[in-house]
Image (cartoon, rainbow, N blue to C red):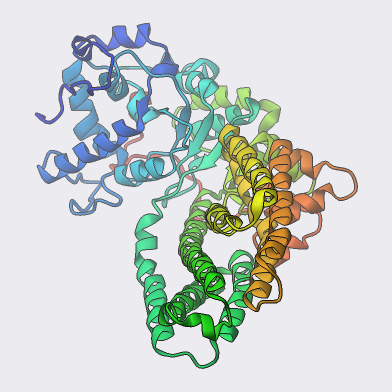
Length: 577
């Protein structure tokens, strides 16, 4: 194969180009297994190279892998890519792994990727790339980390000292990649990796396919509702502009509430209605831009201030409902991926091609089987697993869909700062002091988010959503509505809004520092507070003490079977790894 036999180092690579063409056996002895890693850029490069190899006919359908060459969503199986692409390339370079061929000096491991080899290469790469944690630089993936042309059976003879274990010990996260064929936990090696992640208290995250293609399919509906509302508001006003402003202002509270706590169809419908109403309000203001002060019974200065505030608010809600639609798609994709992880029985029932490996792994798991099964159920229910989440679940918190966070509300909080800042230009020094405290509270929240792991950031996002719904958004809606009707002044409206906003942001910062497990363990009402903060629907808000489902109560989409290659041959050590 001509393509990519010697992969030149990237411009930012500090490695010596001559090392790329060396002795793979010597390299893997010299460089620790935890350093056989790749970057996100490496995975993008691999995706491009595999796609080009398929177009050039260098990767072809096999007898047991009749993939469609025009399919760049799933692609050929990992077995096919390994035989027809990775092995020839790495053999020409010196029989090192693909990861060390790209990074001859090795890279420290931040992310450990666990998968079952049944998925297509594009399915694997797209899920890993789209789910790559923001604080991760390098990842360890067995098909790329292990030298596929060498016999590494000695390295995996003792599972606890295998390359898998060495890499996972150094990683911050473990990324679980589901597939459409069967649960990866029907593979004993994947179950063993779950056992190590539990023992070493790693944060485990479920990978999912890219959300953007699904979002782009529904985006025209949101933009269509926005545009139709804009045109209708410009051409038709069935009542006074003041009444229209009041009705839309009041509607902007229940709609976000329904978007957060209702099912998928209702969320989609509310997002479309919200986009339409926001566009309609902008259209009405467009119609009255020059002479609307008479309709709203305002002085020139007040009218100028009012219309700027309305434009900022309306566009903020337009973007809120657009981002909320993306959140809805993300939650839907995450639920489908969780379904692909479900398995029947216990991890001890998982299959392994080598009886000796199976005996060693089961002996090492020992009496931890029940705890690992519980950790996997946490992963399936919440979309991620961490020591904090497991402790919260032990305290009785129902953590279903914990990882489905609303980034729309985070956006709305930051947008509201610009709106309030504009209004404070008339508020005097006292108001700027309140604004300073508000911005300080938000800065603390941002710092906590930056320092937190994935599960901590998800908890903070959940807290922000609930405080916005319960306190901040009602105060904002009431204050703005009363001000629009001339009942209160700008100063009074800000006196209502800013203290509530400061309290909300301060509470979010405190809860973020405490973490969900400590909140759940507070005396008297800790479990209830934690439950409300992470609830995704009405039933979860009033849920009783949650029970962890038994591992053997989860249905398995496909029966457990022995791992096998598409060609029906049971793979050896080097093929599987």
